[in-house]
Image (cartoon, rainbow, N blue to C red; front, side, top):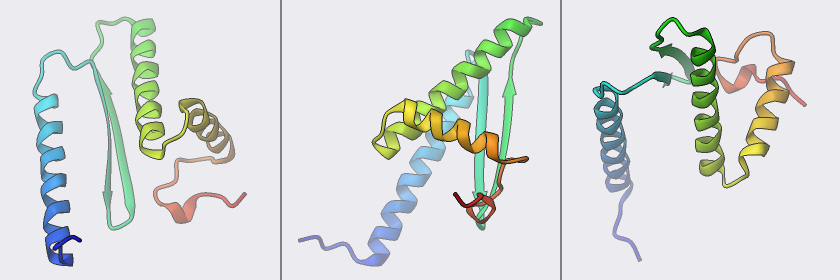
Length: 111
C-alpha cells in the first residue's frame, strides 16, 4: 500500500516534469542538434514550432524533417503501446481531414 497522498503525487509529478524539462534543455544545448519540434500546452491550447539547421541542402532538410517526424511517431507509439504504423496511419488520416492543425482536442473532427 502506498503512503502517497494527493499532495505527494502532485509533488512527484512536478519533480518528474522538472526533470524532463531539464533534460530537454540539456539536449538543446548540444551543438550537434539538427532539428527540433516543440509542442507546448498551456490551458488546453497547443502551440508548436519547428526549427532546423541546414547547409543550403533542400533534400537533406526534407529528410531531416521526415526523420524528426518518424522519431515523433515512434515516441507517440511507445507512449500509447501501439505500433508506429498505427500512429502514422491515424496521423495521416487526421491530416487529410483537417484544414488546419487543431489547437486543442475540441477542434478535432468527429468520426
